[in-house]
Length: 181
Image (cartoon, rainbow, N blue to C red; front, side):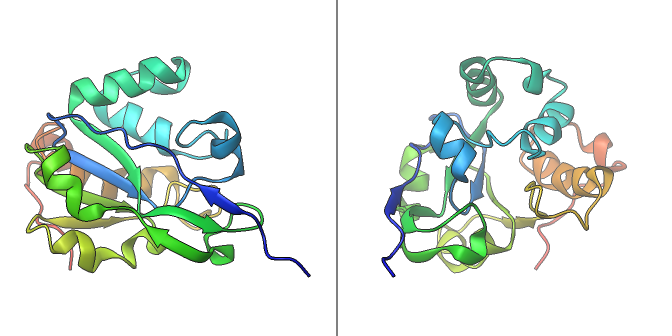
């Protein structure tokens, strides 16, 4: 049996004004084929972030989605630069190579926080905590994370977005939340 092919991830969506970067693990098959973050139609990333920012992100062309994220201070990247994997499940990731997460502060000097989108990404929390910024572990937006409702995910994601000043603190019930440990 031959090993799965080595896959290469997507370029970061990070601007100098990025205040919160959301780190996934590695793009799924649909995202790699499209060359777009969160391209699977059942992934809840775009609906979640669209609702948080009050933007119609799911209805926009990808380029415009990314432009709106940059304008609003949200960055996207993955913890893995490359890996071997059959399919899209994180559990199938093999021989992964990390992205240069230490470069986040240089790439985004205004960065206030890092949010890991799901458990596989959060396994590398020690690398992002080394940046000296608050780090959040968010419930995965993946369709594989069906045990969390959209509303429950949204509530957790609101905490990180409010902490980074991307949405009003009032969206979280008026309390500024500290990152969960």
